[in-house]
Amino acid sequence: MTASSQTVVAAPQRPFRDEAQVETIACPSCGGPITRGAFGTVEKIVCPYCGSELSPSDSGALALLLEVRRQQRPSALPLHARGTLDGATWEVVGIVWREVTADGTTFPWQEFLLYNPYLGYRFLLFFVYDRHWAIGRPLDGAPEIGMFFSRKVAKFGGKRYRHFQTSLARVTYVEGEFPWQIRAGDQAVAHDYVAPPFGLSVEETHDENGADIAYTAMEHLEGDAVWKAFARSGRPPNPVGVGPLRPNRWKQGAGVTWVSCALLLVLWVAISIGYTASRDAVVVFEGRSAITEPLTQEIDLGPAGDVTAVSVEFSAQPLSNAWAYADVLLVPHDRDEAIGVGVEADEWHGVDGGESWTEGSSHNTVTIGGVPTGSYTLQITPQAGEGTSTTPPVGLTYAVVIRRDVVLARYIVLPLLVIILVPLLLWSFGLMVEAQRWKNSDYAPSS
Image (cartoon, rainbow, N blue to C red):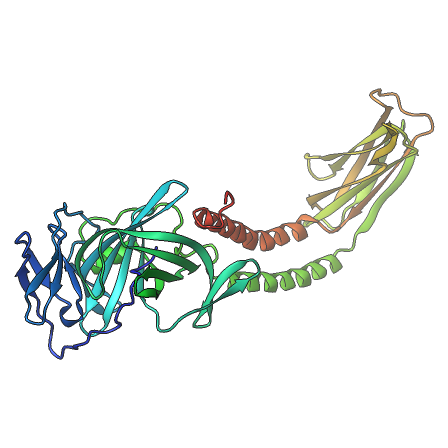
């Protein structure tokens, strides 16, 4: 996921005042045509046809450094392709194939060295293993490497990047021209840090001359943008999974989402208080009787032409390993459709393994919403039993209290669930995306 391990000159040594022209020279090894485009900044040219390593001179001649015979590899973009990125025209002057191996699996990618005579060099990366793209540039300075809890982090430009992985990157294929010495078989220790869609790459190379460290700033790039920039036909390769730098769309705008959630919670509290205060909870019926005796009475739920919420509170005493049930029926005087509800109370206790237990309640309340107001005939039919029997306990009595204009809990609970659920879902989806991102890192759960 990293760019070349050698220090890259940020701008050419010889800036052009006029549009740069290209020249074609024959490879002294195979005779293949080689187009030069980067001019004075070039230290090595690798023939795209045979792979021979060549040294350019100011006169334009090419000296053969190492003669090679190898087959040309097709890459996602061809050598000398031109494209427009960030309002500037870039040419692919070099192509490098690199790879790392982790847990027995090889992860290859392609690096395209882009050149503009006025802006210098950039790196366009295509990760073959998951088909994601990134654009890189030499970093203006060195990041500060430190620790955050138990993980390494890199800080640069006011942004903190988390360490993603450390790996040994190998060069497996080279073609084109480069402002540094490069050949197949070169290796570098790459330390990658991410803060999607941005990243930092720190590469260390060691040779007889000592150590060299290169810093590269990275940014995720969509395949469609690359295809459009280089006027490629068809569609770019479809990405697979979540790349190290791919933005997490579920986390985009998370701050706005949580602020909106907080404001909605404040509004919900104010509306809930106002709604609760506006309910009168008027008792329209209250009665008590033996469990074997039904109750019937005329009740009034308010002036006709409106709707109200009605609560039915049912209790039975004494309950001991027994149950009680009441079938409550509201029969309107001006309509045929009756409203019925069943309310149950039960109480159970015992000893299990030396531990006493109890469950159930002798009280229960059921709320009905959208009940038309007006006059009703109330009919209450009770029943009870001990254990699984339908024989009521001796001395058991029941009580029923009916209220109108009560608070309907769903008007309070449902808006609260919606307010909380939306950011929680976004947060959960964001966590799943991050889990996919980090599964191939040094911090995967299996590591």
